[in-house]
Image (cartoon, rainbow, N blue to C red; front, side, top):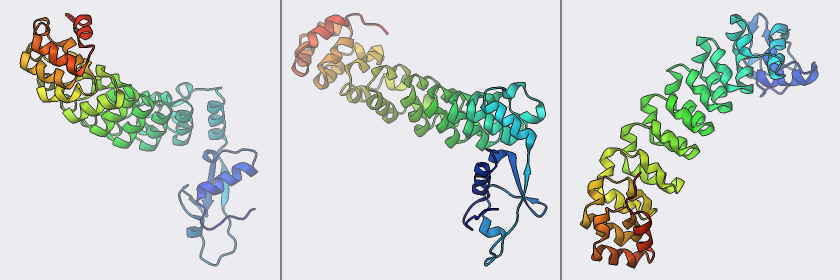
Length: 292
């Protein structure tokens, strides 16, 4: 016996028993009050009347579960090699995905729909999101956790979440190439793409911009402030438009490097470019006939 505060949850009692009973893991313990199996989140104070100084709970050791969990945690066994019954055991699967998130593939279909199980899996390996049910792939918190661990997990999210600003930004921060899985709507959001450029300082994120933005002069007037190479991803009609290029080089002269060769020959354009970037001529020469 030992003292437990009334504010403790059943989980805390199991952890204390783990320390006292030679490392018997909480998931291998079943605590009963009468004939009712207690849930981990229940509070001790709610189980016994106020003023009660002591109470008894029965402990059942789930020996088979404990052995399976220890084998998994020690690397002696893998979930995929275990029986169907074990692969449907929530506690064992939770232990397995915390060791290797990709073990979710071997879990039962029911557990692939279990939000807590999938969340544990993707926190260990974001790619495990591919094995989650479609319902869980639509859960913003789960998907966010997955892309924070592995940006490319963005591809396994539902279409709605692949068009979500917050999720898309998290995926991009982990791996900017994850934007290849974003929806056209998100890639056509000028503020999102400008923020992606500022976050990464990498103009290559613009390789994924929607076609509509490629012809948006005001969009590139803003983007070249951060990096002239973004103009390389503009529609050719902008790169061949003298007036557009003239406006751009007044913001960042180096953008002239990605204008058409014909526009680069324009004296007024090159003069304006040199005023904002003394090395504009080098950019014009080095990126002559530049193709992506």
